[in-house]
Length: 112
Image: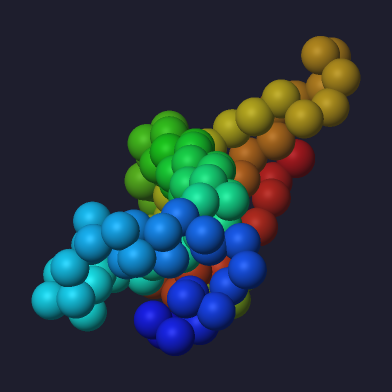
């Protein structure tokens, strides 16, 4: 990993710090991947991490809106232990769509 990052033509920052002695050899061998990659790649990874973090937060919010109930029966395993949430997916004069998930087998389905 160290050799690949040193050979990277865009990683002049790392090579400069090594040449100037800002990073001693005993510290260099303990650096992680994020510390060794070029700044452009590091910025891209940080942006991807933020996107994934936002996506995770949205999933947690959606899961927090779910309610457990025995109202719905799973079409796959026939158990009445499901989580559900409702959302208005069609026009305002239509009923809400109920999104269900079986807590036992993980089957997903919709009720209109």
